[in-house]
Figure 1: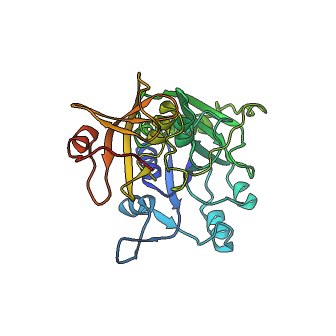
Figure 2 (figure 1 turned 90 degrees about the horizontal axis):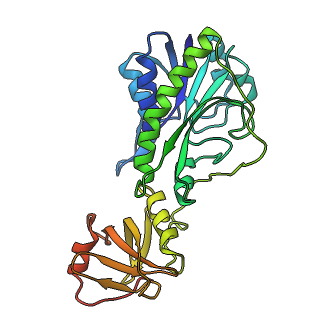
Figure 3 (figure 1 turned 135 degrees about the vertical axis):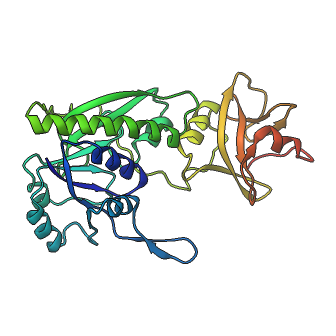
Length: 306
């Protein structure tokens, strides 16, 4: 099939690479977000998808808005059979959705209808889900509500961060997308409507919401830390400065008050509203990440997180 691939970040570029390796399909163009300022110079830099497409000599479409008439005209000229989507970052209008014979198929990192939205992996971990997965579904105007073409489950590790889970899900999703595209091409794909029950939403995580409330349970804070790694990172305040917690685990003790710190020989514990939390990896203000035990050995006196 002739494909126009829509996506922007690295996870989308990795999936595009897998599609490019599939000899049954021809990616004739990519649709991505405009170049974005990066670094101290604020120099505009192409998205990872745009960079990969350029390396392969593939046309790059980067409209300011998906509703731009020029985009519709160019897509009509390209006449794609299908448009696979991975984290494009813009709302596709109905006139574009209607163009390809096999529609737009979106790779979403959850088992729909659970966790519709921008941060499904993070929200699954935050909620303490043990199993999540990948859904390939038909894109429609309503948020992540289209019929599902294929799914695959993924079991989350006890201390698996959102970044680690996304890496595993990307590989799973790329394989599932290629399988779905092959099925669409030979007419064997079957779409099923999403259940009307079990819908949950997955808005982006914010820096403010990533602040740790030590009155929560140790388990809830563990999930918060894992969900916010690598971004925006869970944090608290130590001596009036921001202190990041990159990895932490609830332990079988409940001896400390919320926010109270105790440095032991091989670990550092912090009290919570229910149980104690071991700080495994931390990043004090102005420093690189360090093992929690190493940070604890450097404390001159014990204190309390704010």
